[in-house]
Image (cartoon, rainbow, N blue to C red; front, side):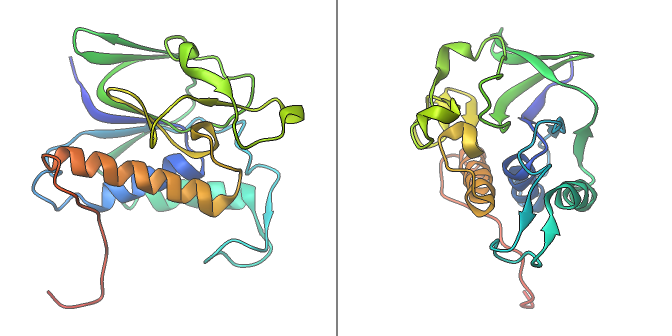
Length: 204
């Protein structure tokens, strides 16, 4: 049975941001042997209808749907990350010490899960419904939800990122949330010693 070390659910801003930071740390000795995957389901991403004029580092007038497409292409730079396209997660259950992640097509196994899909009330993932609560930072009229968590950790082995973690739907916030989860996972893999991943032009 092949087991991922971490499987990210969601190919939107927070999910891809999480994957990019983990991917960029591949040269660290505690990351080199890690198996990382991301299920790229994003049909309901809030970026589909967005246009950006106020997002740091993004050219004004960039369309959200174009940003989604570009993010998938950019993530291919980290070719050690398995991108799983065309599947939707329907269940996350812990069995025999690992998580069984069922999609509409396949079953995957992983040590850690990052849930990075949006805060729509249509959320329905068996095994995670007990953590669903009303979104604390969204207007009640919008009927948004989040997963109950403490600093992105839902329960042992399960992280949540983006609006589903209780953040507001601002691109920079979602990206930062995904990156924060990534550095928490890197720290976990580093035996609890704080770490992160930076690229630099400086000669080492």
